[in-house]
Amino acid sequence: MIIDEFNLNLDEVVGKEKSFMKKYNNIYISEEQIEILKKYNINIDKYVNLNELIYDIEECLNDSYEELVDLEWVSQTLSEYNYYNNTNK
Image 1 (cartoon, rainbow, N blue to C red):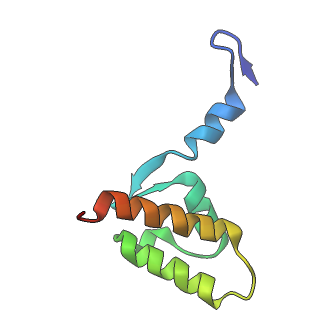
Image 2 (image 1 turned 30 degrees about the horizontal axis):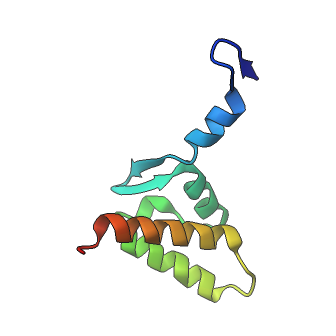
């Protein structure tokens, strides 16, 4: 759907909004990342600490016999966010 006044595609705007990091249970995470975690039965509601979430994602990746590219992406982006925002340098 095109929004004529601003020449924007509504689908693109909604898609980009899913990638914005928002605070959820004291963790900054995007809706897109939450959807991927749900796909692998990782319940974001039980985490209040980003380190614990990353640890459990890595455990899931290590236990899998398949390559879980989308879950690896979540792990990598959350790890980078954690490093740049929560590590004393």
